[in-house]
Length: 504
Ligand code: HEM
Image (cartoon, rainbow, N blue to C red; front, side, top):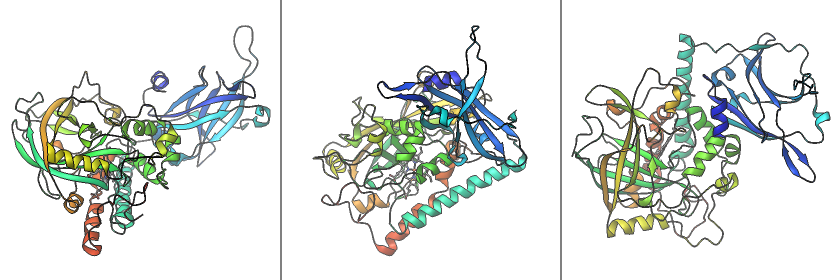
């Protein structure tokens, strides 16, 4: 799919309608249909005009990837978005067609377009094509779309909506989950320890007043599995590092998950991700995974079902942050944590299907216990401790930077922007369950010169970190719930499996 995209991608287009057009044959099964033309248009709310948002044609394997600009498709004045399919009529000797006739029309739900790809999956032109045929409205006048404006008031409204949705989301989590259920939004199933971190003595990265060579910090590190309370389930694993041995206050925190790619890329896509979770008995994100191929792929690359230890996984912060060093040059930074010694990462599952991804339940006849990863980590810390490398990837800001450099679904080239050792750290003492549960992290715990990047609206890639920075109320509500209802008990070894909430 990525190849098709790179061919089709045109300047300014940041989103795609993707799918496959096929015919079904009783004997041969599915047959891809090449050469079907697709036209994506918007009918406007006021007046009768119709805007062309994009066009494409199916390839030999029946696949299409129709590029369009999200901002143009989502504008308020578009009342309805339709995708039309056309097939060629009779072919003349000179290879030209006598014309094209419309054969199908799809309504595309505007609210479901959140950037990256929207997957229409398989479109069947089976035996009933003649019945499916219809005529494109006679009076349809397709105008080339003019770019959605960027006036001052529009920017203000968009910024306000970003603030509003971020606050609303945080309050929904705080009042719906953190306080009544005493849960983190995710990553409840975790365990923390303390240790020390030392910035490397001979940095390869530009001088920075916070990351002074050889500077040492007492630290807290929390490992967790998102989102289920069962280590043997197919989960994303995490590490969070606090540059202080405290429950919350700190000069610098980092939160990272396994997998170099993310499962979402903006506030809009994160809200959709949360909305479409629809979890039941360990099965979740069925619709999200079907609609958003990049989200599915991010998940496939991030889950670690049978990791043998938290200590041998690779963790990525994914979103870029600011980095202004002593030279005053503006740079962007990405962070990751890998084990100190070069050892293979465990738990990687090659090419799981979308169903494997949604079904995160423990495997039938599973022998691993609910807490096996946490016990392994505790034993390891008592025995020898766990040592890690914190690494940084830096790129200089440039006037020519497009928004895609902030997209956490696209990796920065490691050849151009190599990972450099930033610090080495070690965990050598475990915290008990209560202290682990009370230890929390914040994306706002960073010096100004290393903070989060500004975001303009809910589709801005940097809106992910903006949203996180506004979610503080969720942690406060959770901490308050412990005062009101008491501390949640440790996750029992012998209770229901495949659950994500305490006491389920
Ligand atoms: C790529 C982006 C993200 C990454 C890598 C990430 C990572 C993490 C990690 C590792 C934790 C667990 C930390 C711990 O052990 O306590 C966490 C918790 C949390 N995250 Fe995210 N996160 C991301 C995006 C978001 C977004 C967009 C939001 C939206 C508000 C969010 C809200 C939260 C909340 C509310 C918690 C629990 C806070 C608490 O109750 O202590 N995260 N995240």
